[in-house]
Image (tube, rainbow, N blue to C red; front, side):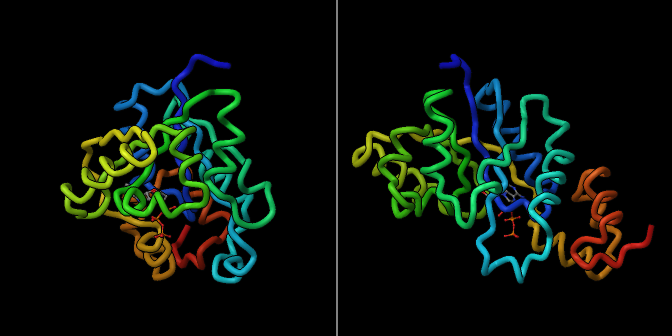
Length: 206
Ligand code: ATP
């Protein structure tokens, strides 16, 4: 087993934006990670209609976006599996090689973690790292962390970093209406890729 601190950052990343990259960089720095595994989620068949961007394109955009973080690597583990992937399965895949994984969670996710599939297994294999994204009441988050400590002997760390106020939904909407301001929220390489491939019904010139 590698004696390395390995983090896991999952998401749909459609597309990956600078809010994601900023969060990932803060995660690596705050936890002093040796490796960060970025894991684009497999999109279940019923969602494919709403999201016509091929999995391969999401993978490539993640490689381009997170390439600026030395410790980051993009995994196709969830995308290569058919249908929905559960965090517990991904942890079961990583845990034998790396031991306890640092799992990045948004504040909204922290509140519902105990309802995820096999949550006690998640808490056994992962050290939870929570980063604020929304204006969730801090006392609620600390209460929840304490509850997980009691019920699951879970460990939860909070990272104090300001999120960039942007979502993939915002980015997709900006691309569709041809709003050049989107360039401020995407890496140059990702924006170039989107334009080249004509993704997200982008109406941007060039
Ligand atoms: P969508 O708008 O399509 O729902 P999203 O921008 O929320 O997408 P996801 O791929 O769902 O992006 O996000 C992956 C993870 O990154 C989630 O845990 C999410 O909370 C977190 N995240 C997304 N945007 C930001 C941001 N601006 N700052 C910090 N964390 C973020």
